[in-house]
Image 1 (cartoon, helix red, strand yellow):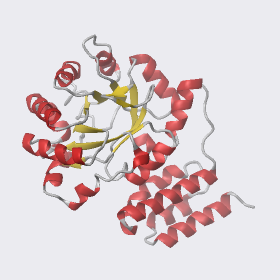
Image 2 (cartoon, one colour):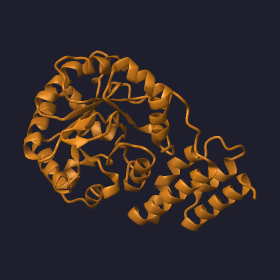
Image 3 (tube, one colour):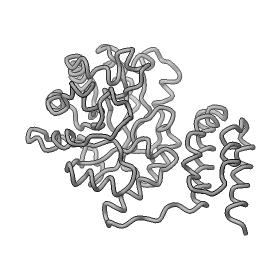
Image 4 (tube, helix red, strand yellow):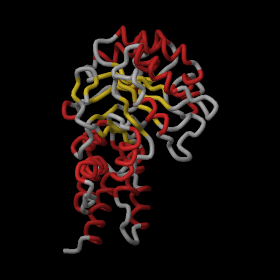
Length: 326
């Protein structure tokens, strides 16, 4: 599958853009463990054009992360075009437009999924960004605003006509947020629409190889994107790919590998964003990194409350001693 001229893999499994999760340290780990394409955290267009330090920092990526897309969000045409040009100068493989984030603070400002209630503006932004940048533009969106408004089949045609090179569709409406089951029926209708020629990527409720194969067979999509199920579980990419290729389950990571990846994640995060932020943001991964270990609660509480790097590293050493006795 290609996004523009960028080779993304035969059936790419991608890491979704997620705030405070899909940062460079975690993207590097996911690429190492099988993710074919990764995306930055979503970046405010207004932050980029104001040179806000946090937004500019999110443009960082390394060569080993490629292919990588920079995702931006906003609701003002001029701001989105200017931000896309800034992102273009960072030399990613493609630029992704966020028209699907359901978070209230983004929607209330007119960004993300709010544009599903203003399709002319969404299409205008897309048209202008495509014309303004030198590399492929992709879109991530949802089925629609709510059950009474799910225009994704026609909307996908219109976005393709506006010049995008691929579309990722999350199988929920904005009203659903992340509740209920993702509905892949309309994703399949988009993919099987004879007018569609760009890659169609499915997203929502891919939690393992079995669910990936089921959705692939159901819809015929060109690739899949994994979001929340990758948190603290970067091995999901190699496991899904192995199952799609062989139909067999791949053994999960050993405790030694989980500890090694956890340490790498924490230390790389600290070097990239500072110790304090790394300690806070890595906490959301710990329950998943060590899921299934018996009587783990005391260690988990220490990991979740430690405020110094040496405390976390010491706890990881204790976990190794307790669960891998020599």
